[in-house]
Image (cartoon, rainbow, N blue to C red; front, side):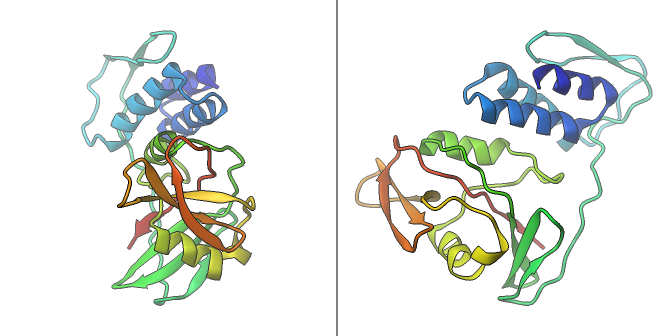
Length: 205
């Protein structure tokens, strides 16, 4: 997937490149080449500047290849859809995403797929931060309230593993622990070094 990501970069397919690097990162957490690729392409996606003709860019991936971009636009953003949903309303918007209205014209967006990988809390946080999925790159770990709401109200709309999932909320009595929600109906706190499942979320409007 590292080589595939490099090929996507050469083709100017930034989103596909990020997804390829992210897949490699999930397959082998801590993969430096994949992490560098994620950071590089993420900068390209967020950039609004046009590339000059003949500009040479360092891919900063494992093979350190030099990429020549001719008449390209760096950071072309894929079309991002906007959705309307009533406060408290749950809706599947395609085969891969579900949203719930949270008021003020905003909604939470959840991937419907289940991630069978488990991470410690730091890696889980980085996983969410670096994730690019369905053109979105602003995923994060959910709060305890958000994750519990997903379990109670949206569980039938998603696939998931029965087990503990990380939240973004550290346990106030001990910064070595973080709150979790168990998708068997309970919640509590766990040491950050433990390996738990991850369900990412983003806020849209």
